[in-house]
Image (cartoon, rainbow, N blue to C red):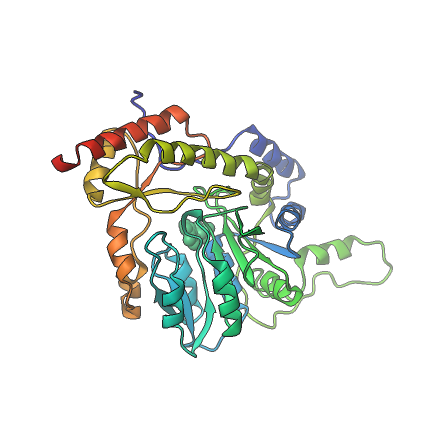
Length: 385
Ligand SMILES: Cc1ncc(COP(=O)(O)O)c(C=O)c1O
């Protein structure tokens, strides 16, 4: 087979993105502007939400969504034991304490029973992460969280446009946070989006992510151009509460607009490739799939398998020119989170078996076939490793 290395992830970028970027260049307006607003309106329509706020990463989205609630310092936030570090970092940014919840045995999402066990009266929010694009059990988490007066912030960094029980992921909780980092379902290089249905929340999200300004910078600018005789101090604003420089800009939005037009294709391509993986690897005796892939209206980002000889498999794949990785080490094992020690037996056992295999929209079927042949060969000779 080919000698080129097969990448793990690759953004699907084409001339369509370049054309959108050119439009922004020709206007010489690359900062916060009408393209961001247009991109946000596309999200509102697609997700059927009232408000969407573009930001410069999902980390910024999660931080903003948590911070605008102004929880008392020292309160607790429930976070899954396996996630990307940002899901927990934003809790610490806000002066709050992460409480790590163990994961399910058959996927990497927070375990509902352990969520209830780890809950205490100091908890103020929960951050369910749809890890790898696999939906959390939102039909259980949301009513339980509401009963216990917890804010629900969905971390949708690894999914975009997927349905769960007929409802889009990201619209189950109080806030949905998305990532457009280069490897994700869709990309703007780096970027993110927050969706919500509450007007007050949306206003606070906008302000917090734009230095804390009390006025929308684009509306202010538009007013300054209006023909009204009334003198408008378009330059005037107040900052009542400190915010951050987290906003999206028109350059990012132009790429996002083009990527979002292809969202169904981005998701369907991954789904088709996952089907091949599922079919080809179903007879492997020493491997299993990390998620019970449910591919109907899905938005999976990751192809993940579990193998007891994980490191040997990764070495073998590397030798055969196939990139792979481990998503992810449990957060309480990272030095900065060790002090938030928690009982997480499933996470500590399962992460040692995790291997992610190549998955991206333009991955060729022949390449998937090559990867699965290599994996099957490893499985057939398992005793040797
Ligand atoms: C689950 C999860 N949450 C949050 C993030 C952070 O996203 P971003 O890089 O856009 O800040 C990531 C990115 O890898 C992620 O996987």
